[in-house]
Image (cartoon, rainbow, N blue to C red; front, side, top):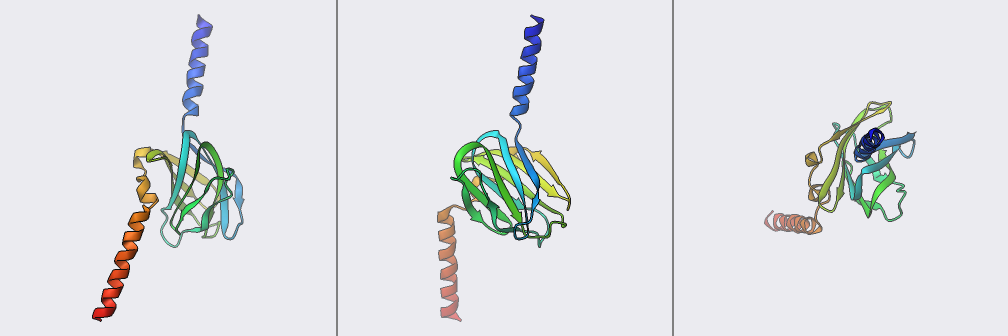
Length: 175
């Protein structure tokens, strides 16, 4: 009976620790244009969207494209801005990828990382590079922005473009 209780406690401890989200750097930073870092995402269950948002003061930004070299061939960059980028692909529970940064490797920077499955927020983490190493702090998934914030809805983009075009047309006609 005593062995059963100990085995059950160990199994429970292992299963709990395996459920924690884990964005972690893999290997050393790489020189690729400016510089990049290999990351691994796991521990949150299946996810189908990742997003990163630069939080350091300007001029810190991501190199273009920000996400590269996915270990799963279905993954690709979806939105690629200089301070916000996202990638999507088949739903999976483990992925390695590179994030590439524009500032020099010696300059500190910080970004937020989010993982989603559909509209469900699975992970939110804050990553800080101090010029020589990473500190990654997990946050509550509820702190992550909604999926629509990190991936603009195509209809909203089209409506915005139409509005800007109309405003420009009116300005030319009136002015």
